[in-house]
Length: 397
Image (cartoon, rainbow, N blue to C red):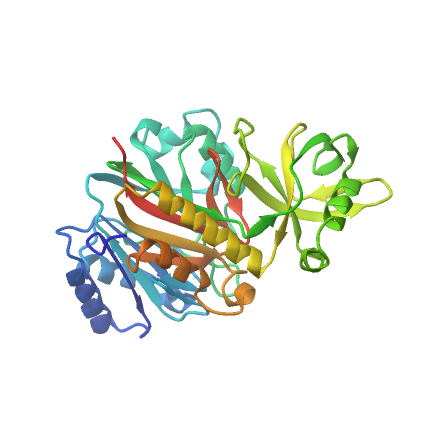
């Protein structure tokens, strides 16, 4: 990432109009680019009473034509993850040739969504005009998975990165920001088009165990047979083949990974959608999972712990860096699960430091989420225990 195109900083001093205005001006002056294309802001619940005022100060003094974001119980600024934050993060991006538009949507629209053209009509954006999306969702008043299903149908194969806003637990209140407006329900999204698109990494924090299998009998969220054998027996055999140390790590940390694109020749990290393994019955041989699998779908069992999550993130970042070696990267956003950070790794700033180690020390902003949004294969999903990294990159010709 280049310091020429993006910059991010953390403000920790509370509501101080003059100080915040001066800070925003100084942040803008540090960005070498002639113009700002987009600003992203993530605020702690401490700013809830002042949010509209803060947005106006930032828009005016940092000269931001399009500003979006949401509340977060924890924040990300460059290489630092500020958990239990009391401040705000502002990032400025200059995106040459980008065509950007902010949109707002509601639960009522999600309930009405149907057909291939509903969202293009509602947003005023045809799918040909958009390369990708950033989205911020209120988790308490919008069906995020229902929204994403219809969005995937209307904007096929377009990546969506972002997260479900967080706030002051256990209060069911979050905030979403679009330009000068504050919302406490629905969602906001930024369409990224023109000469800029989105790339990224979805690290679901797991290590595959055993071999890949085919589901041969399923009913709703019940897996009865894997490879024409009782599903529980296949899982038990997989675990028994692990070393004693890996068996210890797997205890209570088992998940299932489901392939999204069956047309791939080989399956690797990033090709599986990881979902919870809720339970199993040795007598009937049934496994219960937190999704609706398909008959014939390829699966692989997964283990999630701190070491697995670190290994997964590191490997996926390294692969993405190689893939983007000849591509201009303008900046990034990082959306981390509330269950990651110090809770998972035992030390702060694990994910943000890894991102900057691979992509450079500038222009990264984000927050800790109640659910993370990102693509697996050519479809977008709501994830858990995930780090979703979005990178603004130059669109290839």
